[in-house]
Image (cartoon, rainbow, N blue to C red; front, side):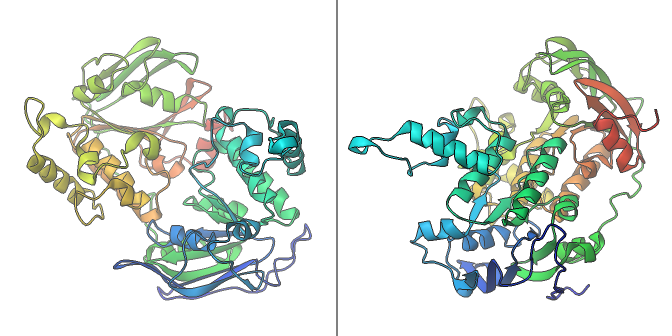
Length: 521
């Protein structure tokens, strides 16, 4: 494939379910240019989405996907180019109701207000009024139930939104979008916080809504999902359109090459073992149990060894990893890090024993968005920045500068607010902090969630590099690409370690074990 633009868009055949992907596009954007100061966020970008499609938009962080979404939803006006909906020009930016009738976006970060009920969220600022202009709550609840039933969302409208699961919140947001009249919905990383079963239910819902005339733009870093649910795919790179093609006609290697500008790396490359059997284990977990989420968990991670902890959501893998680093307190058992037994339930004690940690959600657990890249990078190592409680800015910036260079974080300087970075670079900041004190044990939970292909390769390369220094690594994840480099993978199911799988496994074997299925029984 050439690095230049190309488009492969043969007329799709009618779908078996009666959809008609051909005809006037639901949305068409052409020649989009958007600049933010010296940064060109979109450079002549374009996309065409036809009725009934689920159209994937993929690309590395910083490729222009988020800027395109802001243009398609009327949050930003392009400096150049045009956007049409159903062949008609996009509304004025100030006409928010007109935009809501044409397009809606369900973001990775939920916009549902947790302290309000489902019904209140669905009709916020659109309540039915009775006598004296007072809100008629029975009418609001009745309308909410009718809306949820119409779109097959099985949620009680009187439920406080804060009690909903991630999956339920997404369905409520989709229903709210449809209530405005929009039949074109953008799904921004919709599976990032869902387990395998919830993802399957989401995909079933997408297919059902397609049959009812809804069109989707699906944004994801998980390429296997693109091949499972999407009809067409558009790739952006460096703010430009690179390729549009039917998913079935674009091999995965070509898709990755379009995203990165180079041939896909071989993630199954051989990695020589760096396990040092003579050294004290980096981690020893014995008979660990915690509040019903996991029990009798025992394993070791050797110095220089990379061990995966796999399992679906609810398996206990995340809870075990969080217990190791002190975010949770075990009800039974013990944890030793590099021979030391830190005080249970104490993150500072785990760090002092030699742990470095990358949490599963960088937005809520990994970053302080208002603080600088330098402060976020060095938060866990204040003793290296000064004495007697006083911090030296020079020491902080020197340490941060070295970590910025080591992790190839793209930032104009250490003083930039971390919120201004792309998702991939934010994840690099979280990794940099975990590595800032040369840990003896590195614990990572879903370390590549929400990052692009190249950033994923880079981060996993740093994990391998860390193991070569003699540190042990524990990776708790359900992402197969995160686990391929592991010397062995421990599989958890319903709170127990049920199997150990050596490197060289086949995807279907590991997935079956994670789902509690024995293929060889």
